[in-house]
Amino acid sequence: MKKTFFTLAFMTTLLVAAQSTWKSDGAHSKVGFAITHLMISEVEGHFSEFDITATATDTFDEAEFSVDIKTTSIDTDNDRRDDHLRSADFFDAEKYPSISFKSTSFEKTGDKTFVLNGDLSMHGVTKPVTLEGKVNGIISDQRSQKLKAGLKLTGTIDRLEFGVGGNSASLGDDVEMTINLEMAQQ
Image (cartoon, rainbow, N blue to C red):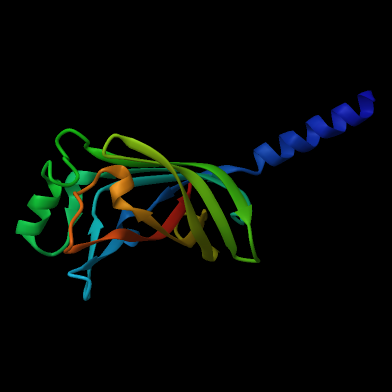
């Protein structure tokens, strides 16, 4: 019994030691979204200020993610629309300055794919969401000699569940999220 306990403790220590912290590279990452407008077209945008951290193995076989997005950094290539989205009609950026996501589970679904479940907090509401993930590749950076990983996370949220924008015939309820990441091992 003691031998089994010590073996289990040793293996757990190795697993924990195999995990490291990864940070998003803002210059090579993008937090994007798309929503239907007038039920005939799609408007895209992104948030330019965000911090994404992961605790993961060198191969991203297991990972925990923490995301913080600044709502004031919304950019749809239209200043008037962006100001409206920051207003109390939508994100109410003054009252709710950030959107956050904290993963609760990670499930590997293929050689380079996974499902990430977590809690998304936006506009004062927290709801569980599921994101599909893909590891595009992992390399050793020539300058830092540390690992870099390329990842893509996608998912759909219902903006009305978070109280963002009212019921509107001109806007779709579903928002498609696409997060392209280049992450650097710390």
